Length: 358
Image (cartoon, rainbow, N blue to C red):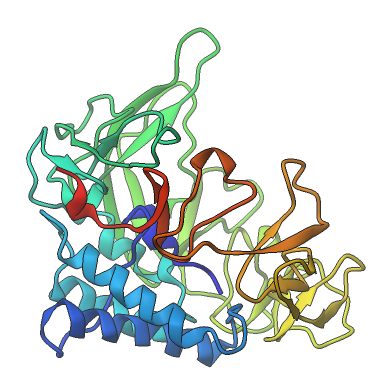
C-alpha cells in the first residue's frame, strides 16, 4: 500500500484528508482513515502485515488529528470532505487529492514557527538545512512570492507553480508561473521542463483528467484525457497515460493484474498478496519477524523494516520498529527506525506534532 503521498508532499509527514459529518478532528480523521482503508481493500493493494491494519489506521487517525489541529492549519472539513470519495474510488491513493491541496494555504504569517507548509500563509515552512542533529523539523514561515518572482525557497501564490531550469553558466533559476485549468479534450502542458525561457503559463487538466501526449512528436504539448481502460495504451507507449484504478500497465497496455507464476517487471503488476521477486515472477508475499531475511518485495517484515545496510542491496534482515518513547539515534537511520507516524527527536521516538514548534 502506498504510504500516503500527499502526507509526505503536502503535510510533510502527516495525512489529513477526510469526509465530513462527524464533527471535530476526531470524527473527521476517523472518516479519513476509513476512506483510505476502504479504497485499499477494494483494490487489494494493502501491504500491511496480517493483523496489523487496526493499529496502523488508529495511528493514522491520531496523526491526522494533530495535523488538523496544528497552528494555522489549512486543513478543514470542506477541503477534507472532497478528498474521501476520491480515496475510496482511487484505491486509497492520496495522489487523487493532490489538486485539492496544492493551493491550500494556512494562516501563519511570515516568521511564525511551523513544521509543515500547510500551516503557512505563503505555503512554505522553511526548516533548517540540517535536521540530522536532533531530528527536529521546526522552522519558520517565509514570505509569499509573487508571479514572475524567483522561488527557490519560497511559495508561489494560489493558481501558480514554481518552475526551475538549470544553466551550465549560472546557478539553477526559478520563477513562479501561473497555472490555468482546462477540461477534457483541451490542450495542456505535458511537460514542466524548461530550457532557456519560462512559459507564460502552465495549462493543467481538471481532475480526474490527465495531460497525455498524443504522439511521439508532441513535445511538451498534450491533451486532457481520462484514465485508460482495459486494453488501452498506457505508460510511455500511451503518451504517459495512466490506467483506471485496479488495472496495471503491462507491456504498454492496461490489463488485469498478474496471477501467481506469471512473468512480471514490478510488484504493482501482480495481484493482491503477490509481489514480483528476483526471478521476475509473481509470488506470494511472505512475512518475517525480527532477524528474518527480507528483500522489500516478496519477503516483507511483520513489525518493522528491511535493513539492507548502507549498500542498499536486495538481501536484508528484518528489524522491528522502535516504539514511541524508546531511545533512538538520528545518526543510525539505516539500522533503526521509529514506529509509523513517529520520528527520532532529541534522542527519543516521538509522535510528530506541529504544535510542538514554538
